[in-house]
Length: 258
Figure 1 (cartoon, rainbow, N blue to C red):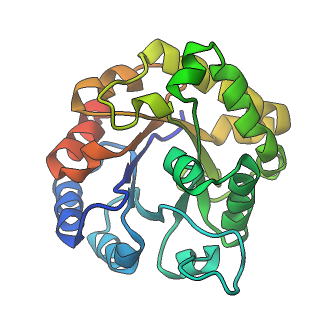
Figure 2: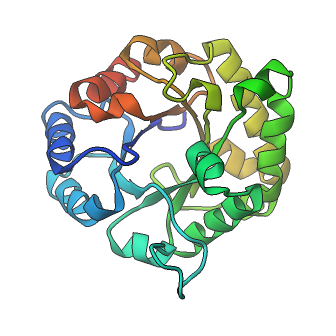
């Protein structure tokens, strides 16, 4: 069975006190047999990575929220994959819907970022998902497939790395659910997760068996267990609920208790 991954995406929120509270809670009560990934803003990465190492909590990792696919150069304000790795990260999120919508990142850009992450020894959490209009038009599968298409070469080259022996995860995050308080039903989420795994398997069956496909979109303590009970949902990418240590720990332990 794939070891679940619960990732906290703080976006442009949080501070070191939040990291301390989450890490202390994990150190005290354990992570419930899951991998836990903390993705704070760039300025906190090195310190949070240091705190995580000192805590020695099994499965606790640190990741960045983004990177630039260029190795170096005159790209003011950007951060390369090598810099992310040097800060102590094991993971990086690429293609989050906010990056696509607010910063114009294309599907090809996301694929380049995933490859850059791999080149630096980082495991990528690749985000895909449809808008409300696309969902209403019955285009969920078509949109997700189009977002996955440029990643075919990336999936084909998937190998070791990451906490579960695979160097990437895919996060299905329906855009209409993010920050809305609404969540996809467990059954609907499962159907898209199955689609994603089939597309990975078409390029690399071995990687499809190891890769984690996780759900993101208004995950909270009240709905986490129902989502995680569905076969093929291997964890969660948690936004707002990860900004309260108690809620985030509740999601971890409520969904995947030892």
